[in-house]
Length: 117
Image 1 (cartoon, rainbow, N blue to C red):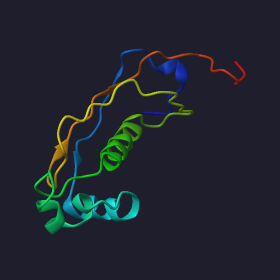
Image 2 (image 1 turned 180 degrees about the horizontal axis):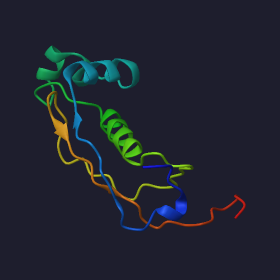
Image 3 (image 1 turned 30 degrees about the horizontal axis):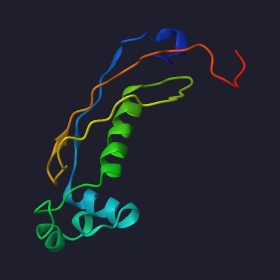
Image 4 (image 1 turned 180 degrees about the vertical axis):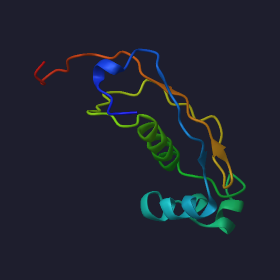
């Protein structure tokens, strides 16, 4: 498929997001760089935490899911997301978990404040 433009999108159009596999190595690497709490970076310390094991940072989870949404958008000419309406994280994300992302276009607007129409 060729390049998509704003006029090719429609409210309610679902994005085909690939599953996200959270590996132990990725959880520890992200934790060390951006959220170095013991339950993200140290398996022994994590085992003694309220999580009873290693868990991904919620920031890592959100970032990984953002990546698959961007990839699902394909070859867009211009992209701008001005908001996220809802993110639910019901359970800790552990090594080996596979995340599913549901995303769709909503409230598409032809103009934004401060930008020419």
